[in-house]
Image (tube, rainbow, N blue to C red; front, side):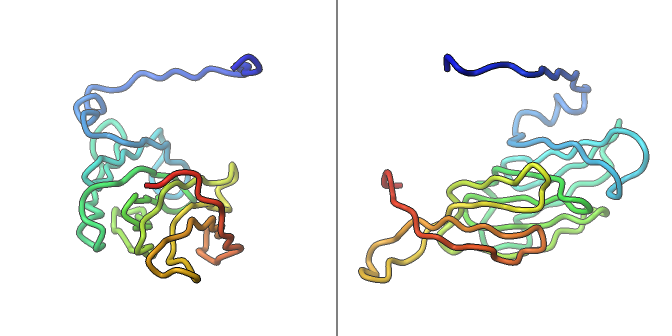
Length: 165
């Protein structure tokens, strides 16, 4: 960490409503533009798969686990990819949430999602999942997958597995 340099700091004060929700929150993102009205809005992803959009008060909430087979746990990422919110689950679900709170299942990876990260411009999603090994079907291999925000696959590469799950 010797070469780590702090280039900026950002602080914010949570409202009482946000603190009330915080016991089960796994991710928070700020929402800009077309999802809502003027003013600062934040979307919260709770561990049970509930997405809550607030602006001084709760505008809507959406239960993601109702539309996918992944169950209600394992949600880990919520990102605003204009004009929708995108939620990811360790169990493999990718769900988009529209501006009125309506959720739509984009797809599911049957072996789950181990890790995921959006590019800074939110145009590309890189994720790691696993797939059945071609040579030995009883084993799995790790796969790095990149896709656009429109869900077109750009590349799929097998990567060396560093540790077992």
